[in-house]
Length: 298
Image (tube, rainbow, N blue to C red; front, side, top):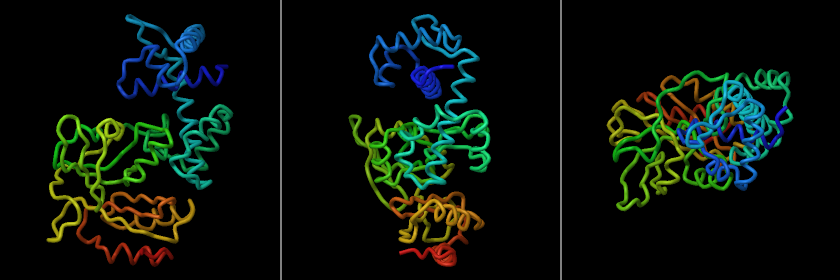
């Protein structure tokens, strides 16, 4: 059985490959925060166990057995994150580090029970697919690659450290949030964004870590005053949101409305964002449904 250190190395190879990164020892060492000597030893173990192989120009790849093992680890990790956020009410910004401790102790039997208890989620709280539970998704575009005037909905975040996720949360950037690129500063400067009704800025390196499902026609996005059809989003402060149960109730209540395409509830900031594509979904309709469920919007 692989040790936790070997398992972490397997996960790192898998995630870097998923990002389209050429995997070499130095990049693995940087990703895991360990020395070159440690990575060399870990790769020797992986190769001895038939889980990895080193090809031309020292490029590291997973064998079929290594891919299966990595997918199992990623699945247990992302299910653990869902357990922590959906059941225990932990912030999505903190779930990764705790899940790292849990994933190595979960047996295949517990994994099956956990997936069933969570109603077989297809993504982690950061929007990343759970291997074996998610189907092939839509083509995604990095926020850094959007053109001025283009927009999309955040699908997943290619990062896990708490400080960075808290930074994104402060900008309102989380899975389900609608983003429009307003402008790009010259000389690799920051991007100006509209997130919901708020305008903000983000550096290009950070923008590369957010993957969006682009909208086909979004110039002038936001709620159209003339009642035109198109994607729009509204964000509300809902003081009564305090736990994972509140989150589920609101997501189910608003998500059942015809024309609503996504609902994101942030327990920490007590904000609810609703993305919709039907002119019949008005501010009054959304606020009335929240009030009916006992969560009046401020």
